[in-house]
Each structure stands twice: as C-alpha cells, then as structure tokens.
Length: 165
Image 1 (cartoon, one colour):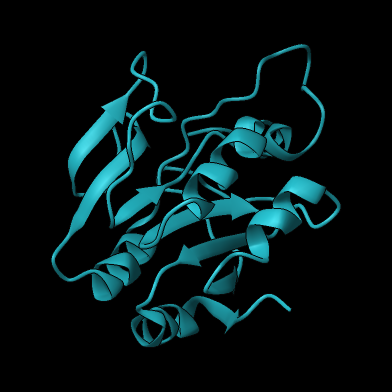
Image 2 (cartoon, rainbow, N blue to C red; image 1 turned 90 degrees about the horizontal axis):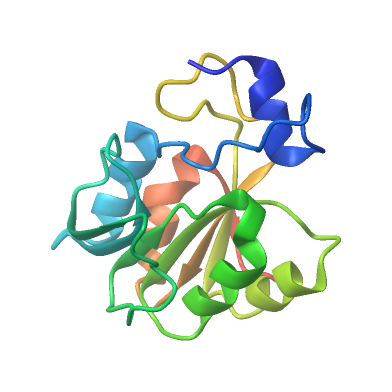
C-alpha cells in the first residue's frame, strides 16, 4: 500500500525526486458499474497491469503500448495519469469507450476530450484498489458511446452524471 504522500505525487510535483507510480488499480465498484453499462463484457483494457481486477477479454500490459493498438467498442482505460494528454484523445476517437481520469479542467486537451463525451460522471472520492486513502484529486469517468441510459443508471450512485456543456 502506498502512503498518502505517494498518492499525492500523482497529482502534484514529484515527491523526493521519485517517479510517480502509474499503476493504480480500478476498484471493484467502478468495475461493477462498467459491467452494468456493458453486460457483454469489457473487450479491451489497453493499460492494464498484472494486479488489475478489470475482467477484459484482452489486457495490454507494458511493454506493449495500448496507444498503438486499435481500440474496439467496449474499451475501458484507467491510463497512466502522467500521460493523459495522449490517452484522452485516443478514447474520444471512437464510440463505446470509458476512460477514468483525474479532473484537469485547466488543460485544453482535457476540455477538448470532455466536450466530445456522450456523458461524464464527476465521481465522489474513492480509494484505488489496494490503497489506504482516497485519491487526492477529483476524478471523472468519460463516456464516449450510445448507451447513455445504462451509463446514467450505473454511475449515478457513484457521483454526478451529466453532459459536458
């Protein structure tokens, strides 16, 4: 388990000269909500790791690069937060993608992806799987797709669901 200091390093500057860990795992309640949106299952997790609980049919783990493969419908990404500028536009290219990301409304690239979402959920604070404390920054789930009713029903209990205006 990482300390709160290590978690804060995701959002702020490097802590003690260390690189930020980029392999936080999606918690079960988020996986459950995704399963409600896509009952047929998650087709691809393009940024998985050995300890992920995301039940994707295909999981891409480093050194394979999830940004260079084609993303089918029902792709879920919990990308490295230090590389969001590259990951968010990839998810916005096609439909039926979900991307978990920290809120960065002060960044043009974040807002550009947000305006292309079908819906967005401003998530209530939660701890990532295996972490002691909640993530120290606001998080959002970007939804690019046509199952907006399912998304609303699945994610309403987890935060505020709406459209980016």
